[in-house]
Length: 331
Image (tube, rainbow, N blue to C red):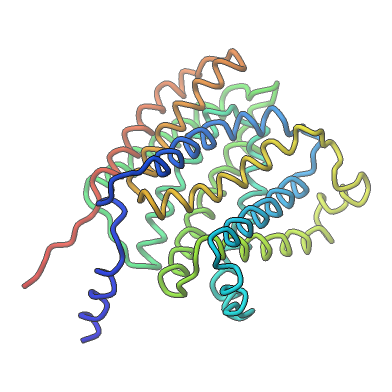
């Protein structure tokens, strides 16, 4: 009876892949593609090395909260959610993922400054592998044979980039050790954390029935509190107390901060209205956008390692999204 009830509940949920994309959905897809592709370049160009990482991450979290609250108010569910909201439910659903994402964002900000944009984008795609791994352990979601092969291709590309870029000079005159330990290692650790946090968020949405906007608000607030607590002992905290919160900021620093916040909102909209398959094509297209923008604005063609790894990344993500796992029906 329990299995039949669960099956009936699943049948009530509309499948995004079966719906024909509307003009609004195509707008979401295009905007997310541009945001994904441009974010590494925006961060590298407009966030100076003097900017304290914690300050930029906190500003992004505040921007996310503002955007999510505006969207909740616009759809008319803000008052209802405020009445139904409880502290225990919020901490249970969003507390741990928020803390993980806060650490992940700090690692990404460090990596932005020590890798070229295309290398960062491709290494960042390894989060797909770790997301699949953690969703299997936490939610029991299996992968097809072709998906497993696609994930292997992705890891090969990540190893290739790590070895190749770690033995060469980094962007902006960085040494090989700086590229490896302050560029490659942080983004790979951030990918592991992203996979874990994504799986926990999916669990919260399925079990706790949290909306994506509400989770954005909760996670941003909890993550910001975790970051503020860390400033009492961290080097960033000492730098903020010594130089001020906005040390190294310019008016243009808000460009990547707001862009990153909008991207977080767009991810939820694309996933809800277009499904994971189309989101996968967004990620692939964003890699090409990154390469194009880097060549146009920086005049820097992709390195030989990127040229070899890029087709592996594109192929792996395309295969993974195209051939999902399908369970055999039993009579």
